Each structure stands twice: as structure tokens, then as C-alpha cells.
Image 1 (cartoon, rainbow, N blue to C red):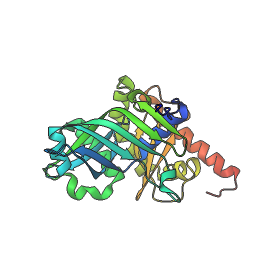
Image 2: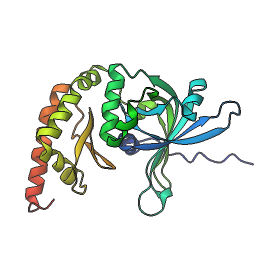
Image 3: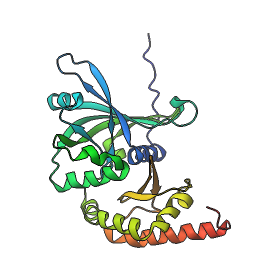
Image 4: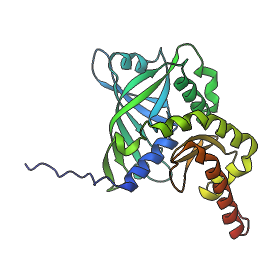
Length: 260
């Protein structure tokens, strides 16, 4: 019997962009790991947050079954992508093939992930600081993207995640201050990013995180993505870019009679 043809499409910019949106906006995922002793695959739901490079991280209790399993065998897979209206199988999803790595909670990386996670999961503060909780980073080797019927792609880490370079380090140092300033002093502009640029419904929108390619906005259980017109080339560009985005949003709003 002849082998079936590979139904994957050639990876393109559209596939990379869809994967980026799924990664940046995910709040939950189905984590598959190998059960100790049996080697059988078992799945668990975890809360998710993307690091500044797009890598998915999740907090977990030392008492949970998947934490104990990953300590012995870090190989795992994570499925992300929430179903919407209609057929759940018609909505895009991304399966990551990865290894879980524990992050020290008392370092700068752990503190940054905590802040990012709370922005997406504001009620998680009741357990996030318990002594048995730690963050885990999914070092992804490859991924499978199903963008809907007839839209299947194989992706590499380079297709999905930003390189750890000087720009990423610079932005990581100023991100918290910029996010706090915008949310506290320019909430009107943040609202315009969501309702005008992303065409979302009005809500208590806040910036959850910023990266060189765009920003993520959160309101309650929703997270949306707004990409910059062009990727940042330096951390110093972030403030003028945000100012220009607000200006562009106000001009669009005025052009349609002020209707949000």
C-alpha cells in the first residue's frame, strides 16, 4: 500500500502570524505528559502565559501529578487555541512539542512571569505565591498548526519565537514601567487600541504585555493581540509608537463619526 501524501502545506507568513496570535493570546492549554511507571500519555489543563519572546510558560503546584511527572521526564506537548462559535474543529489550534524547564521564582525571570500571568489571570494571586508553586517554561522543539480545514503546517521554533538578542533584553527592562504608565495614565488610549485598532467590544481593557512585534490587551477573560505597523528596532521606540497608535485610532474614530 502506498504511503499517504504529506498533507502539510509549506510554512508561510500567514501561518507564522497565526501561530504568533495563538501563542500571544492563549490563557489555557491542554498539557500532555508521560505518566511515571506506565509511560502512558495523560492530559491536564494548565493556565498559560507567553514570555516576552513568545515562549509559553505555566505555573504548577509541586503536588500536582503533571509536575511530578515532568520532574522525571520533561517531554510533553501543549495544545492551545480556544474554540469559538460553530464547529470547534473549524477553529485554529497549535500543538507544541516541548520539554518543560522549571524557572526559579525568586529571580527576575520568575518575577516577570508572575506579573505577566497576573495580567491575564487576575484571580490567580490567591495561589500563585504559595510556596509549592513554580513556573515552568516550555522549550519548544517544533509545532503543528491546524488553521482550519485544509490549513495544516509544521513549524520550527524559529517560525514562532523571537531570538534572545539585545533588543529583547532592553525591552524586558522597560516593559513593566511602560505597561504601568499606559494603564494608569492613558487608559483612554488603551481602550482605543482595543476597540478601534483591534475592533473589539468596549471593556476594561488594559495592556497585559509588550514585545517587539506588538502588544497584548486583556479585559476579564479575554486577551487580544494588536501588532505594530513595523517591529521595534530599539526599546526607545516603544513610547512614540504607542503615541502614534493612539493618534491613528483617534483619526479612524473621527473618520467614521466617532462611533466606536
